[in-house]
Length: 152
Image (cartoon, rainbow, N blue to C red; front, top):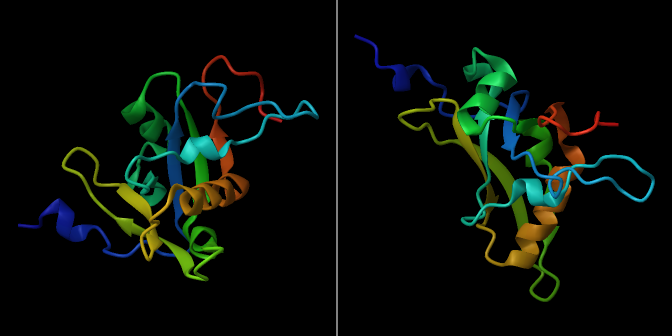
């Protein structure tokens, strides 16, 4: 008998699409001074500094599955795992370089669950803020939150 967890690849491939659910909140998708809606770094907030994502290849229902698992009316961002892994930042006073990776962290109720994390772990808010800003630049909006103007 095959256990479902044993059939899930233990590495997130570089070409994999990742889904990140975002609440229906203008702070996550603000309109900038040119009138264009942007993805805010706040969309990647996480107390543990390990933003959760879903592996699209393990979501038969696509981005809608991620949205519905999160909260009604929320939106979904997409990222490519290889682009996430290309991100890094350097601590200004120590010179320590922080890389970024993605690992599967399947949950009982969500086998597609994965987390973005630091190598070494992001140990200050300032370092994590830089990574969140970089994530917001490479993310794209896949599903707009309910009630928001059309994403431009």
